[in-house]
Image 1 (cartoon, rainbow, N blue to C red):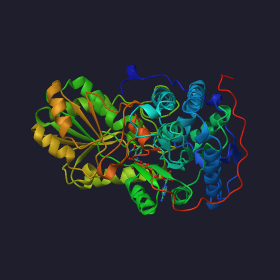
Image 2 (image 1 turned 135 degrees about the vertical axis):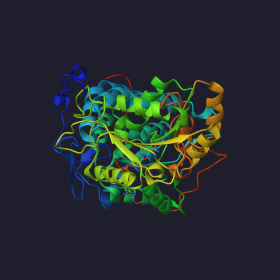
Image 3 (image 1 turned 120 degrees about the vertical axis):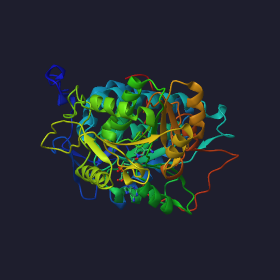
Image 4 (image 1 turned 90 degrees about the horizontal axis):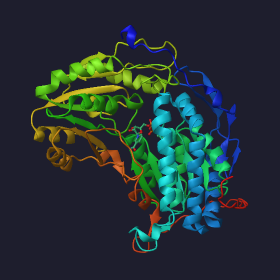
Length: 507
Ligand code: NAD
């Protein structure tokens, strides 16, 4: 990078954080020590320990499910929709009040740039709670089936790439529909879920309506397999999604799966190139490429391939890679050593398969987990880097000549989560979008999220939708489409004493 484009450091202060040294499990409205083996959550940009995190074992998961059941039976399922809405509005406002703190914690724990956690993740979290708060008292009137009722206790397991946002996608619709929840955050990013637990306390949500159990995949396995849950909602890898589908098969539990992707970003020769370049960068390198719906396969019309690749390299060379807490940073740290290993291995495979790799000319920090944004050109459809989800800042570039070829190549994937189309012609955009087998298709933009817009995949990207009115259907049963009856008894546990529900006036 030339000197005149260099920026002075502009670090966001972490002084706003009031973190505990150790976090317990959030069960029945209080933090309590876990009985599993505790672990550290570290900052991936420095490898420094942030806090010690409890791990939930079987008895803890039992206790969390029992707390959620008790809260469901005693309070939450008995509240009116407008009363549930008041709590959700209160949570949304508290997220806004604590937005800076949440953004700093997210960047610290996950490695994503503060610019993204501050301007994208946290505002969307508040938007999700506001949006579903608005639905809570309208469930009977908007075509959600005859007399829609909640399912009961929802077990929710989420990944590390958008820790707080995935929590909001899960908890907001579940609570709006009248369910109670036990949520397990990913083991490398539990921090904002635990701060969210404090927000739940601050909002004086009845005890047990939201429970947060931390731990690794084993805690997740215990939670989804628990006979006391009525609904399982999972976001994560296709491999784990498959295991969960097997574990839930044959039980009365409802299941939604939001899994991996290998989105095609299609650039036609009549596209506005400057905008398309920004869209390609956003599609592939936003959040270090740790995005299920990333546009990680660029399909560019052959006639403009060389121009697009040249301009893309010029743009990528201006990206600032480094300290996630610096407000100038565009690309932060890779979330874990394990993920860095996986990305590095795919880069090696891409080169071995014959594709040509090019990486941003950046000086990477010596401590922490880093990978320079990389593009591979000359990629064939058979290459593994064109077919498998890398989940990192690596873009595979392929070409096409006709719209039909673009559609065929875009659909030539086991996944079906997202796609993008760049063209000046509205009719072409609509015709191509109609033929793409992807849950979300963006036109002349990429990676845009809105709580009113349903999101979800086809095939190995999972099933069910989150967001919008459709996102509520996953948490409701109705007289004309009842959920299967619970065949197994709930594990008996002492009931959690109900808390006095304060009036929802602002504190
Ligand atoms: P992962 O599947 O390894 O882990 C996800 C969560 O599942 C974690 O909390 C983990 O502890 C837990 N888990 C692991 N094994 C389990 C088991 N046997 N039973 C129950 N829970 C278990 O995924 P990850 O590496 O954390 O996240 C990356 C993946 O998530 C990518 O494939 C990405 O595409 C996907 N993702 C999808 C969406 C979407 O909306 N479709 C959104 C974000 C991420």
